[in-house]
Image (cartoon, rainbow over the protein chains, first blue to last red):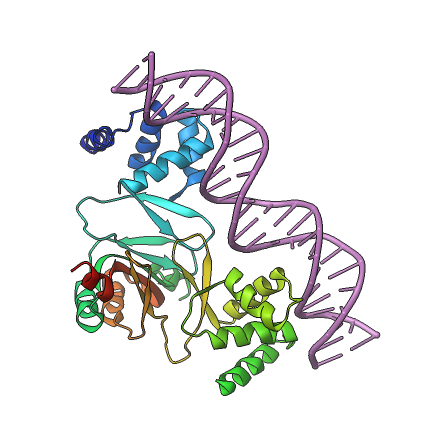
Length: 148
Length: 148
DNA sequence: GTAAATGCAAATCGTTTGCACTTCA
DNA sequence: TGAAGTGCAAACGATTTGCATTTAC
């Protein structure tokens, strides 16, 4: 986790960006909530506890910067908010999300199961896939149980 | 196409909605642009040629109604607009989109290739998938050619 | 006749931007 | 020191809403 932090700071410096205290706090909040899909407002609330004078615009600017450098990824759950989550450098492609229609829970799927599909797109359409984003809607295990 | 129109009107009536001229014009515009992914603003421009006094709010209200009845589907290309396209009643699941990073072209993929993936989610996570949405980013055939 | 739908304008709300001030390098 | 970054408030822009009027059934 700390190594990751250092790595990202190096990455920022290499691109000519300064390491400000605000930038560090935003990054730390993302590192501390790896499993979450934070809206900017949520991120702002978290960050404010550590750095109360930070402005919302700064949070926006920094999360967008981290997104441009592919350190975080955008996620759209169609609820009117853009969400962000820490990118996993082990993954070439971003992972999938299983979204429960009943309780709204979001389950991460880290395996990339799209390989054969993407290969077929190259064959059928000549389209070379670089990345994908997939959401699966349905009912999670717990809700199935609760429904009997 | 006309049969489809009648079918949808019946569907609306069954749910207790009135068939207003504005509603018909919005529906007709969607039927006439089955292959497109229209923003509400685009839809408004189309609809105004036929029905100049229509209000933007009415277009919003009607496209949302059609979406609730699963007659049209939302599509998010992450460009700040919500887009809509006519649902295909033959498909259980919505189709996929191949989005070219270079020219922005959007290719429809109507085959559902996710069956085995969704089955594996049930096995691994106990998650029962009802629907999915997938976007694949990459380079289309034409752009590959142009790049040599 | 009456509940639903419309049109318009105002409100909402997530996000962006301009600018004077501050800070990292 | 000076360019990059910040904070604030104002601006923006897509979408929603309140309300008086109109319309489908």
